[in-house]
Length: 553
Image (tube, rainbow, N blue to C red; front, side):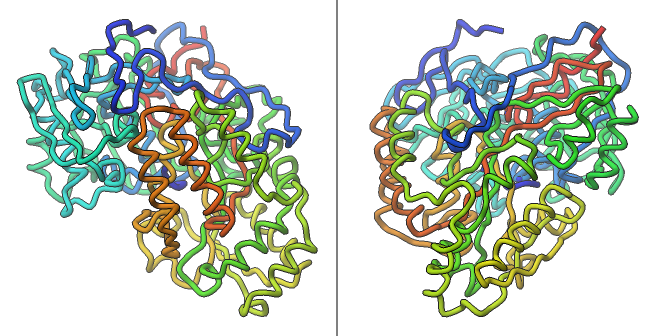
């Protein structure tokens, strides 16, 4: 899971029956919007745009979520950082556009016993400086995620790891204290990034910062980084994977976060495109003569995440908010049908395809208000709170018209049940930092968060959420039974049995409104008509998505 500012054929892959990734089939994407199955939303979603027909000189791309805080993969907990890192640095496992999996820097993997995973590393791969990729680089890169001094954002995916060692020139062995079905899937996202070990050691604390801050094997090299302005990527002419050879000789990446300015840039053709386009821009961009809006199946959602304040910790206030919010209006009016009402922490797009019936049945049994909200029930819940007369502050990113409109609508709905809501608009960098620095959340009771699963597995989210050591469990919510069920699920490779554990945990944390889920969202992408090839799903965040964008003619 990441907060906002936190989507060919391979016949040689071996299956991994014990550690959670069936190599030849993988997870399949949701065909719907990922929200409430009865919401009535009818959306046309795709997986990719047509394959590029040729190369281009320069691709002009925007990051609507703002400037990356760092390009160190252990710090890439935000949307923008993930996109750039994925185009510079390869992962052990490759995420396909349909959210299934394929070989990456690892050509195969095997599990000789339930607590061992052995990777065979691809030969002939070189870093940008011409040096060869070795198993030692892989082991060092992965081990940084378990180093307490590094304090990696990816640590929850390594919580069961006891050792990572290079056991041959092109072999890496991972040992676990107990079976972990999630780990291998996470190797297709930021947790599986590999960089040059000696370069990281040389850079020290400066790794991931500035124009010469990383050394990787990806399809683009980092050429420049002008703070507050742009990042420049240039083609790696020696890239090993022909399927992801960079179509653009250069990519100029901008950080236009203001919705109005972003819309003008896209409509005028000054920008060729962007992933994560705010829903507020959809009306103005629909029918544009320079390009088109595309929607893809996403693993993302919007939630009100409670902070460690009296109001955030108050279960009655959380439940009152959940009951009174008009999710249908948010989905149709604010998000222009690019979203659906959501009533669980994990959106349905993150359900395991082999157990969807189990997840759907459990979802249907949840005590959910009507999509339009239930003001009477919310008033009754609020009356139980000792803080019912206080003001609740919601933090939101400034400049994002969609998100500001969302919290404004929530503010109006709250007034009808007697709850005062104050909105605090935060600059993009402060907003991003607030997810990891509690000082930046001071005085805020709830954060409007746009989150996304890294892989299509509920445990990717749950490991960060309603468990005692959850990275985003800011209120310290602690239910021993829930934690035990989630832990058992992670040790269970059988999808049906794993789903049973998960839905039992879900019933407990949703009853307490651990978070306030709002919407399941599609990925919204804009492409200028001169270019094509972009993936449209959440894979766009974790695969070299900019590399495959090229000429449409």
